Image 1 (cartoon, helix red, strand yellow):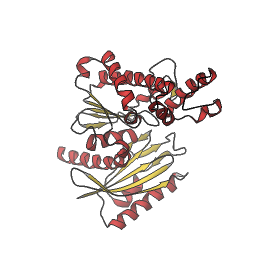
Image 2 (cartoon, one colour):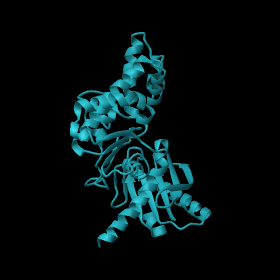
Image 3 (tube, helix red, strand yellow):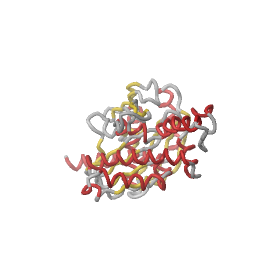
Image 4 (cartoon, helix red, strand yellow):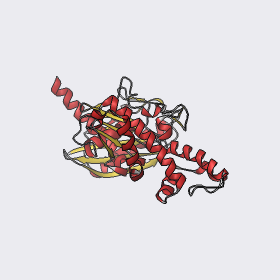
Length: 329
């Protein structure tokens, strides 16, 4: 039985997971959570302490550690490079404290890559050689599995699809108006809804998700989703726009990468009933038919559990990579 650990580092909170892996399934023994300290050094100390407590509680010997964190980062050197949600974390070596302490393989990946590995190993991506995982949560990023291997690019920047501009104007996302993230992310949907709700309220036709101008800045994608489920006209119009833009972005990915599966997380799974027919219709119009014929569009199979599996999958991928390297020597 292989024992692995996963560390999830976020701007608000961190989590440390300990799990068994039997060659097929992960059995998560326990997960410890804590609020992310302001200083990176204190965060690393908390991660080390939490992990050591889990190891002692279960009296196990670790085989590998996986770390998931928002980018940018340098996975080869194990450095976190000032992610937007972790101010001050500039060139922080997150890997060495754990390799020095445990003398086992430790791997760092951004959250989209970690999600792609999790879905590939345990979710909707099982059995695929070529897949794309889209986060579609707070932001929009992609993790790529190409020819059966995680592809992260020359300097860990592969998969930054959220930065691609879909329209010359539109909601802001990833620092760019009209971007994929501007239309297809929690933040982007909120900004789109704020602008459209303002117009509706000024026309004396407020939507269910916002009754007054004074509440405009409080609108979230979740609010819009709840209103859409209740049949609110403006909420449904917003998700119609989102569905069309999502289809447009997917068509580009289908044509360029020719994947077997595109797996979409978070918001897509929650709003699949509304978004799926819109997305498939746009794909039929925009994507190359020969490429589209071999590609499935699926919600994340792990659903809301993907965060529990992501960093653990990074640990498993490190073991697999090391084994392949040894066989090649």
